[in-house]
Image (cartoon, rainbow, N blue to C red; front, side, top):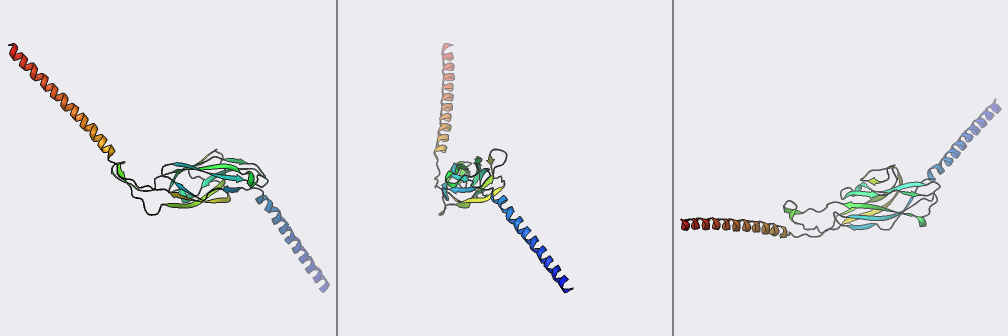
Length: 220
């Protein structure tokens, strides 16, 4: 009986070892399926000074040393949404086995919005602005995603990310603005000119009527 129990225990241990080896082999075989597809990103700047209401494009490099091609696109992270009115990027087809030295260039363009407040007296006219001591700064990332089927990314849509990103800080430049009264003077000059022309025309009109009446009296 003891011998049989020993044989049963050995058989159970052998079965467990076989199952464990099978699981290990399965897990290791699954790793390459995840590692064969991906991208790398090269960046040439980590901070840029931007101006309000302008469009600026930053250049990056995308490569894929793995064994599958990738259709990639760039996107700015949500930290930039308060200052970036619109972002655009063209998809880049990256062939398999592309090294870092052969990275393909890709631009991410930012259309900046308004950041600093202005004090205006008449709608958008007669404005002035005093800049704060420190310029507004926004920190985030430039993310590489799988390009959607539509050929271009606009706004802040998102696709499947590859888990790679480049750091970026956007510093919004600010310039003091003094109130300019030139438009008001220009409008005042136009109004004054029109008023003067109307007054002169009325004066001449009254003068002609007076001369006609006097000539009629003499003729009688």
